[in-house]
Length: 387
Image 1 (cartoon, rainbow, N blue to C red):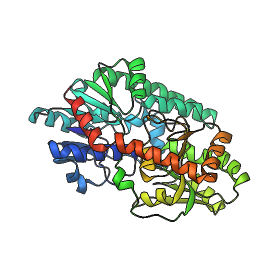
Image 2: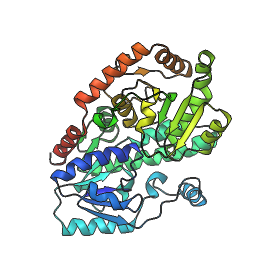
Image 3: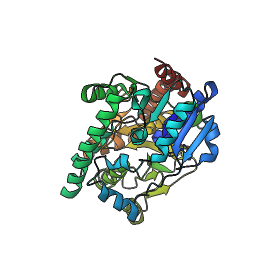
Image 4: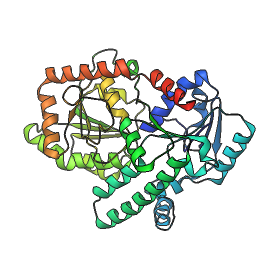
């Protein structure tokens, strides 16, 4: 049984993509019962599971009155708001019924968010795409106002307490990097914690023919995820002006669903900033750009967008946080820079030296092609389920 907060189509977030690619391969070998809240397209669930169990539950959309009310309730709830919004008695009952009626070889809770609905966490494997408390602590460090900082600190404390409790109670924790696994060992002392690599479909991201450049820089990601919002706005405010002192015509594309109003306003004021919103296929945005940027100051887990960029054959400049947990070598596979000036210089270095950029991109592509296929990742995950 696989328990998640949503269904996997459209796969427009890193966690969805990772789960979808793994389950498509595991489903060939195993019977998978997929229990999730009724978010996303249930009609395509046969691509990755034997049977789907959609649970009726309303999760307020961001930037709505209902969402604001949920944030206010988060002031008094003992649970972090990122967890309480997915609490569902109906999901808990469905899991109880299925666990009683079926003989599952394994029960997987995918992400921490639906874990409050598990009737018996001790029988489950927790698939942790991030160390969630780390993300909230980084929100505290980068908060724009004292009020934001106070609220983020409150949520960080509650998330750390909840995450620690769940990690201690489950049968096993599976992280997406050894860095995250070691962090959870130190902070939460789970019974057992292992790590699986992030994967990528290199063939899918390989262009069949050369593609004309349409932008200098591309930032790919869900634009309703707070770390991406922070990174995009930080890049436009503090890094792009430095780049344009030496390259005035530098253009950047932000490709991903649900961009915030502030980012759209930035694009309205600057003709060389393009914000796409949801796109049916992300690959042309990689292929049409000279450089993939990952200017994240907040985050956890590993960034699929980096492996996808590498598979697409374009160089990557990232912060340390953006590339955290990935087995890549700075200077060989990627350039790493953490302050605005250094990040801008790294971008200019790539844009001004196409031969060196192409060499780094090829070395990165060779790395992911040789070691990080989704088939290998899914087999590794399966072995951990029965260990």
